[in-house]
Every structure is written in structure tokens, then in C-alpha cells.
Length: 333
Ligand SMILES: NC(=O)c1ccc[n+]([C@@H]2O[C@H](COP(=O)([O-])OP(=O)(O)OC[C@H]3O[C@@H](n4cnc5c(N)ncnc54)[C@H](OP(=O)(O)O)[C@@H]3O)[C@@H](O)[C@H]2O)c1
Ligand SMILES: [Zn+2]
Ligand SMILES: [Zn+2]
Image (tube, rainbow, N blue to C red):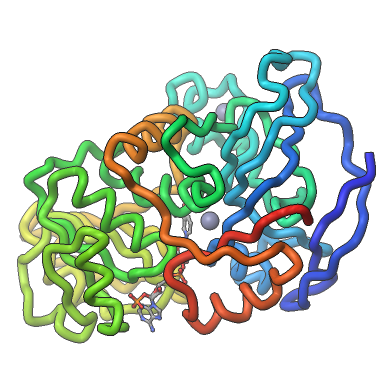
């Protein structure tokens, strides 16, 4: 079948529209006709081969809302025509300890949508049926795409780690992930602090759920203030200051990917039993709980829509931080 894709021929190159042949869905797979696809900062990192896992030509895009247009032999035909979400992961082995234990996002054989296969800036994308998520009534499908990577990534540190609603939670970086983290943490019942390098975002951060807003430079004035820091920034930060702002038993949860390794002093970890953790989006089951939670609490990505043909404009603007807070590219590709 001939489909349309937006691909980069080489590292850092602009995306170009072209045709490609997509295989029929495997026994366990569905083919989604892409209706909308969000632009995550990980797409930019993949285009730049910042993580050393990119292959070219590269078709980014992993915050898909799509309509099931074909199904493999092992997939119920009742899915045909339904609208589904798809995030970073598109497949896992289904039989390892992690998959059968409900933690398929920790499977050693994970398939990421944009690693070694083509992503959602296209007319169609393939995924294994376990990794698609039905979009419940009450959630606007056109704006929902960013939930399937950005949203699940920041829901996981609350849900998968069973964070207490009495926790004092700080969110560093009010971008695609961070603006959703503020909404989730507020709905969770937590005391929420937004920490930003752009104080111009302060009023919006409060509207998104922050009880207070600090500039990143002020963090050093708040030792012991937080039980959980959800760090979505992809920059090298002053790690000793971050750790010092954690209360005893506090946890720094790393979601953004800074260029250098984290330099963490040992004594505050030892003395206060503080810890540093991270997570890769989450499992299919958590994805389903997340969309229900969003519907119940009115959590929605704040997005700017552009037609898919303007994908290069969106990428250039995301690189300079010129978006509040997520681009969604609309099909047809
Ligand atoms: N773990 C996972 O599974 C997972 C999933 C998705 C994405 N990610 C990663 O998460 C990171 C964030 O993705 P995103 O899509 O949310 O990106 P984004 O929309 O670009 O947001 C990143 C935010 O970082 C902050 N920032 C910018 N410059 C900074 C600086 N010099 N120092 C400190 N903070 C700065 C900005 O917030 P302020 O203006 O508020 O400072 C910016 O909005 C990326 O590294 C991405 O690859 C990880
Ligand atoms: Zn597995
Ligand atoms: Zn992403």
C-alpha cells in the first residue's frame, strides 16, 4: 500500500514529503490512518541523533491520534474505524516477565514508533494492538495526541510510584511535558510548584494548576521544600541545588534527557534517604487509566494546531521554545 510520509534524509535535515510502501499489518498489528500527531521534543532529539539511536531516512512523530483502517489476522475487526491514541512505544514481546507483569514499558524487546520504523508524521502508521488506546468520549480527539507521550510520561511518576496526595511536588520545565504535569499533580491533590526559566509563563502555570511559581534561579532558596521533583528539562542543571531542595525521603524523578550525566552528591542521598529515579512513558494499562483520569478531571493539552505541511515550521519553533505548550500537526499528510 502506498502511503505519504514526512522524512529527514540525514541528521538535522528538514522533513520532506514523499511516498512509501507500508507493509500490511502483521497478525497482531493495526494500521492507523493519522488524523493528528503532536510534536514532542524527543522527535527533535531523534532528528539530531542526540541519543545515537536514529537511522535515516527518519520519520518522526509519536503522539498519534488515528483511525484504525486495517487490522492483522489476530486483531478483532470490531476495531476497524475506531479512533485510537498511540505514543512512544508501538510494540513489546508480550511474554517476558515485564510484559506479563503489567510493565510492558520495561520489556527488553520494546519497539519505539520512531526507532527503526516510521512514525506519525505520515498518512498511516503501524502499531501492535496492545499499545493503542481508545479515546474515551469527553476527550477532544484533535487535542489528545500529546497525552500519549507527554501526558503519560508525567502521569507515570504519580500513578506508577503511588505518590501521596499530600506530597509537595515541583515540576521543572513548563513545556510540553511540564504543562501537563502541573495539571496532573494538581488533580492528584498535591501542593504544586512550577519551576521555570521563563517567568513570563507564571500566570499560565497558575491557571494550569500551580499553587506557586519559582524561577529556576530561586530554587537554591528553598532547601528541603519538596517531596518529589518531576524534572522535564532537557538541560544540564545544578544537581546539588536540586537535591538540596528535596525533603528527607524526597525523590528527584528525571524525565528530560540532559546532554551530560547527572552529577549527584552522595551525602544528601545517604543522610536524608533521598533518591533519584526516572521512567520511560508507562505501560498500556497505565495509558488507559490516564485517559480516564483526564476525562474525569478535565485535563487537556494546551495545543497550537498547524497543518502537517507546516511540520518544519513547528520543529523550528519548538527548537527555540516558541510554543505554548505543544504543537499538533493535523492530517492529511
Ligand atoms: N522519559 C520519557 O519517557 C520521555 C518522554 C517524552 C519526552 N521526554 C524528554 O523530556 C524532555 C522534555 O520534552 P518536552 O517535549 O516537554 O520539551 P519542551 O516542550 O521543549 O519543554 C522543555 C522545557 O525545558 C525548559 N527549558 C528550556 N531551556 C532551559 C534551560 N536552559 N534550563 C532549564 N530548563 C530549560 C523550558 O521550560 P521553562 O520555559 O518553563 O523553563 C522548556 O519548555 C525532552 O528531553 C524529551 O526528550 C522523555
Ligand atoms: Zn516483554
Ligand atoms: Zn515523546
